[in-house]
Every structure is written in structure tokens, then in C-alpha cells.
Image: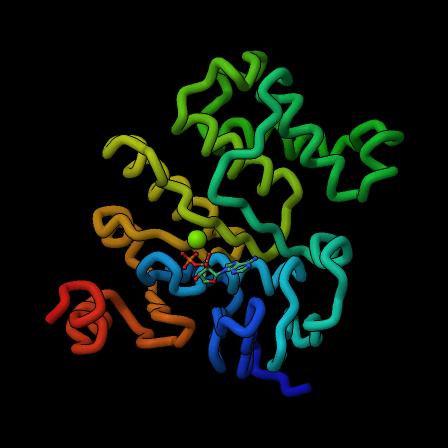
Length: 247
Ligand code: ADP
Ligand code: MG
């Protein structure tokens, strides 16, 4: 166990599904307070990388360190408790609950399943929920059932649910999928605000969104880390150009 100061450090990660190698000797490291964009064509292994961090998928080889601790063998239910939260590609809000109730549920969930059923919210948690509902711009819709939200608003509610659990590391899988240009711009703003208090890894393809975020980019391709650096470095990389533009 080496102390590198990284919040998340992945070394030599290899993951396969029935012999198909989805991640091949991947190194990836994120500093506390950083926003990092993870790019790559469909099937590159981006979602698998996040799944492996949260313990949903097991690595064949390699290590994952979170706050200096090796979590590669830690079960999925414990990893949430450690402070890693992943938002999936498709929204998972409970349609019949209000915006606020969804957030309260997420705040309680950080206590584990039994805690979520039995305990009332502590003052700190209710404060957090009212703070989050403002942050994700849904204050005026706090009592509205989630089913009535627009697609973009549902995505924000889901980001809010991640925030309600207050994890040090947030991973967002394609948060702007299906959003309008305007919603995408608002999401970039939201993520920049969140970055003041959290470390964020975000998978996205949308170039406008990525430009707005002004964060470092890591490019995965066919299970390998192709290139890392600021947006210009990545854009000028010949391998990245050949992957994206067929040059
Ligand atoms: P991305 O998110 O970059 O589009 P994924 O990580 O979802 O890519 O998938 C990477 C590759 O691994 C794809 O070829 C996909 O079909 C395969 N894959 C992902 N999850 C599984 C699974 N549970 N079983 C079998 N193959 C999988
Ligand atoms: Mg994916």
C-alpha cells in the first residue's frame, strides 16, 4: 500500500466476461477535489470501470485503492458505506414519490438497508436534503411526484440522490444523455458547483458539455487507456483522432 495522495487509484486493472477482455491493464487515478471526464467509444469499457470500482464487477487482476485502502475485494454493499456513489446511465428515481421523498430515501440509504427502514432523518440529514433540493434546482418542485418531472429534471434528481448520501467520490455515467442543449449547459454548471465539495468522475460524449467542464480527460478504447490530459492534449493525440475520426 503506497500513499500517493490520490482519492482513487486503479493499478493494472484487468476485467473479463467469459474470456472477453473488457478492461486490459488499466491505470487510472483521481486526486481529491478533481473532476475527471472519462471518454471513449461505445463498448470501450467505461461503465465496466465504474462497476468494478463499486464492487459490482470483480477484477481478474489489479488493485483499486480508495483513500489509500485496497478495496478490490470489498463487497459492493460495503463500498457505498465507504463513500463511493455511482449514478447509472438510466434514471432510477421512484416515480410515485415526491422529489423530496426521493432525496430523503437516498439520505437514509447511506445508513444501510435497516437504517433506511427504521430511522427518522437526523437534523443534519434534513438540512442536507433541503440544501440538495436547491442545488439541483428543484426547490419549486420539491413536493411534485417524480413522474411529472421532465427528463432533464429526473437526471438532476438522481444527481441529487447521490449528493444526499454525501459521498466523497461521485461517479456519473452519461448524466447528459437525452438532455437538451440548455439542460446540458445547466448540468455542466451544476457539476462545477458540486466539484467544490466532491471528487467527480463523469462519463460523457457530448463535446459541448466537456468543453464547459474544463476538466482533464481520460480516453478508454477497447479496454485500454489510450490517452490522458487536458482537452487540447487529448484532441491533438493522433490515436484519439484515429479512434474518433477514423484518420
Ligand atoms: P461502455 O460503457 O464504454 O460503452 P461497457 O463497459 O458497458 O462499455 O462494456 C465494455 C464491453 O464489455 C462491451 O463489449 C460489453 O458488451 C462488454 N460487457 C459489459 N458488461 C458485460 C457483462 N456483464 N457480460 C458480458 N459482457 C459485458
Ligand atoms: Mg456505458
